Amino acid sequence: MSDHYDALETRSPAEREADQFARLPHVIANALSGPGWAAHLGAVDPVSVTSREALAKLPVLRKSELPGRQKADPPFAGFVAEPVGHFGRLFASPGPIFEPEGRGPDPWRAARALHAAGFRAGDIVLNTFSYHLVPGGFILDSGARALGCPVIPAGPGNTEQQLEVIEHLRPMAYTGTPDFLKILLDKAAEAGRDASSIRKALVSGAAFPPSLRDHLRERGVEAYQAYATADVGVIAYETPAREGLVASEEFILEIVRPGTGDPVPEGEVGELLVTSLDPHHPVIRLALGDLTAVLAGPSPCGRTAMRIKGWMGRADQTAKVKGLFVRPEQIAAVAKRHPEIGRLRAVVTRENEQDVFTLRAESAACSDALVAALGESVQAFTKLRARVELVAPGSLPNDGKVIADERPVG
Image 1 (cartoon, rainbow, N blue to C red):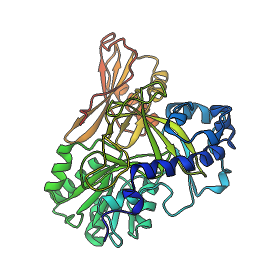
Image 2 (image 1 turned 90 degrees about the vertical axis):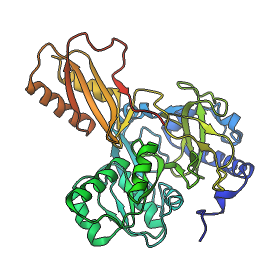
Image 3 (image 1 turned 180 degrees about the vertical axis):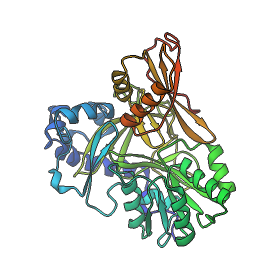
């Protein structure tokens, strides 16, 4: 049984680069059939884009711009070349950002990440990513089934019922956020339930610090992380080498100076751009807003694709909390609903190996009713529960920041 998903993972970097850039002109040509891409890319000649230098001359599309563009020109602002009816599923992620799903057996390119995490045909997978409106559940579900793994479509929450399912069906593998895996194991221990069948995991959607990885290992679960986005699926994934994340074979990754499209020298921290080589859903230089850096050389596991250090912070104020993006415009919507308050600041921290989301609001009046109302508004606009703290008027910094991600990096 091979440690690698296929031979593509171990080909020489030069061979991979030549193959990817030989395919890219066709992808760009297909993108130009979408009016959004045609207007965005301008008079580019697809045949000329056959190198990283040529790709770097194309404009950047920022993920943070997509909600406004899609609202002005539904459903996808012209950034999807195929007719809507050609896709398998249509999703609405927080923002909102609308995404289509392809019709192939592994449209989100998750299978090789699961394989690297030790998943094999026949392993029963408990998938706790959401299946409601967002693609998270389907990203890992389709990848697992492409490997031949039966999937329990559990979704998040309902821990008591999930523990019953775990005892009955004995899943060997878990997919979901690392925080929820810890919750399940803690609840099982508290209730005297047997969750010992779970031995491997692929986690995403939240911070996965070494302390939590080691904690899960001590409890018998070997967990790896994947870097994924609802726009294109699994972009990079951890391998048994535990040295950075290896890029998927279906993407060209670039690291650029935040706010620009200019590539940075290898090893320098910058913003991650992704170009998908899927001609049916082309994505060209999409800026995800995440900071990372390239790790030099191939992985000790034998995979030769570009490696990145993983998530190293945000290039903008958008933050991912418990698997969902929180954006400045969502916090602005809360402020608009409550004109009686002053400045707002959403703060993201970590406690007990879990994300904690707190809304701090300036208010001359302190009341339980206001706290409750603000909490309801935050949940309405972000789909997340938040702690609400009322602070004195003028006490929040006048620095324009509305989201402060204070989680430790690394």
